[in-house]
Amino acid sequence: MRFLRLLVAALCLATLGLLTAPAQALGLGTVTISAAPIWLDRSQADRKLDVINRRDCLDDAKITFTATIANAPGGAFEVWSGAGCDAYTARSGTSPTCVKVFTGITNATQTVTVRVQSIIRPTSEDFSNPAAGTAATCDAINSTSQASRALFFIDYNVGDNSSLITSTPKWAFKYDTIGPAPPTGITADSGERSLNPRFTAPTGETNIIKYHFYCAPAAETAQNTAGTSGGGTDTGGSAGTAGTDAITSGTTGMGGAADMTSTAGTDTGGTAGTAGTDTGGTAGTAGTDTASAGAAETSAGGDSGTAVSDDSTCRAEGDQLVPGEDPPQGLVECGSVTATGATKGHTNDSLENNVRYAVAIAAEDDANNIGKLSKLACGVPAEVTGFFEAYTAAGGQAGGGFCSFAPARRGSAAMALLMLLGTCALVARRRR
Image 1 (spheres, rainbow, N blue to C red):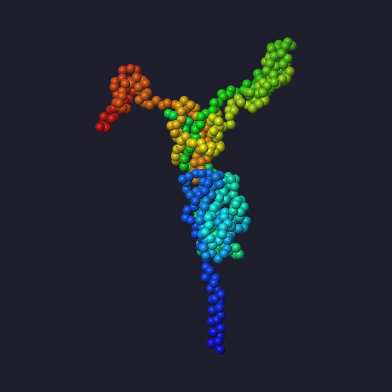
Image 2 (tube, rainbow, N blue to C red; image 1 turned 30 degrees about the horizontal axis):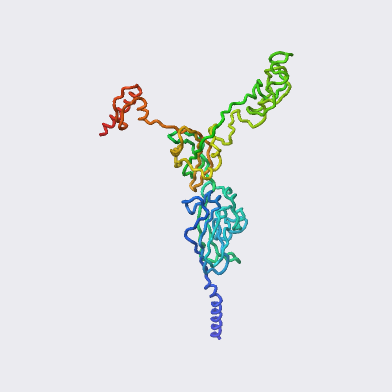
């Protein structure tokens, strides 16, 4: 009897083992991705593969991987972007930390293509729609420094959302789509076929790596004079109300019945003047003053151009450089300087002497974002007279080197320079 019981128990255990064996045999599958992604539609070459910037976003650039899913027991294959996306709670609910960027096929080798605008979008932008993400996404990022995310390659059970692979591979990346603020206080000193910009670094920017200079011929700017209206005595204000005749009382004065400046016209100078004391004629009838409120103001201290600059007379020809805007696509910089400690720089020696140029500066950060243009400054490249040229022009006769000389016989300025050269020669002799 006892033997029979043992036999039944053994058969039960064997049956249980047969039932559980297939599940153990199934195990978990694997997902393998290519070691390095391939970029598509990326206009900026020679950049880090794992750093995304504003230009990548505006270009709607794409990244491709080769992914192989093997031995997974069915399920769904998806790619998500964010933090901790291998946990279902990060991909669901009202506060997800990830966005879906690709839906693929399980147990297959396939090309995974993801859009930059999709993988960096906030979770508020339809987090479960792989096609979401637009150019507006490029302005929706709040961070002014590099933020971190990763792509998670996931194969999961659609029934209970459990993972069907041994481990979830991921690709980490950083992104920053906001360029740094421009420097301020721009000035432009003259150089030989160049300009020497000076500036104040922007505050609050900790990741600037370079300043870029952009040059364009300066536009001719009319020199505006202040308007004559708006004062106490009206010599060209709005149609004056009856005033006090300053010449005679009762007799028609120089202004006659109508004010001499009251013919209809369009305002070309000054804001609308307040009524003053009529300097000519008896009380004139109201007319339209030629310097009253009318068309757009072009004088009274304002520049009629659209560009706002530190120098109110400085504008780039054709508005090629507009402060507060991105540097125009295709515009080649005219110089640059490394940002660390920089407050000045030097443009390329490619400008034309005695021609007025406008220069603007834009900062570049460590994600290679180039920010908005600064205000403008204008300068005129000019021939620079060197020491020896100045010495010769003053009457010096030396030649054959800086400290080589012959006695000068003309001009006190030449003698002064000769003394300096003598000092140079004495120093050189003591060093021998």
